[in-house]
Length: 207
Ligand SMILES: NC(=O)c1ccc[n+]([C@@H]2O[C@H](COP(=O)([O-])OP(=O)(O)OC[C@H]3O[C@@H](n4cnc5c(N)ncnc54)[C@H](OP(=O)(O)O)[C@@H]3O)[C@@H](O)[C@H]2O)c1
Image (tube, rainbow, N blue to C red; front, side, top):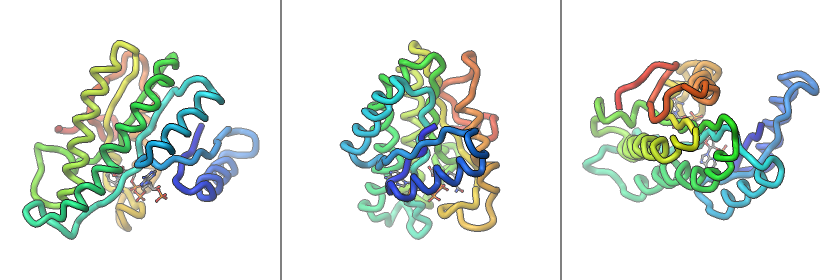
């Protein structure tokens, strides 16, 4: 398993923590530097995966941010909207472009976009406009990639982890393991599992 981070030191540290937590010698978790907003960084990461493994079984697009609770759609700062799109939309798009050939080389490829119910058009209001618009666009990208990659057997789905107690979610949310369960579910779908869907806890969400 490859654990990515913008900071090499942080990726190394967290990979080591996860290896220790799994028990000595039981988990092969390797750090990999990746900034999803940087073409060169994504290309270098894809080249390293190609050299080391020749394929990628699961791509999880988890990086995200700019949860702009301080602004509304009608008064939004478009620089903030652009910043959200860079990480939450173009980031996953950039990694999908770079890693699609390696996913196609896998026998059971899966692509998981970590989205949010904030991107659901059904319930959309005018709050957190940069975040919500970028996640709605990520959901649209999920549908497009699923359609494009279906013939290659790549199952592409968006998941919402729910409200999770992370740096972004703040205190009060679900434990990280509960949020991550949605990601694990989509990453380990059987070959006849769904593609082009939007799920939380394995259940469909409204688009
Ligand atoms: N927490 C919630 O309640 C909640 C709810 C719905 C959806 N989500 C989604 O869940 C995902 C994970 O969020 P989180 O709650 O864990 O947020 P978080 O605590 O703020 O962590 C975000 C992660 O994204 C990474 N990241 C940000 N920009 C990046 C970039 N350009 N390249 C590579 N990595 C980058 C950060 O890395 P650094 O350590 O380098 O900053 C950090 O590890 C996001 O997509 C978020 O939208 C979260």
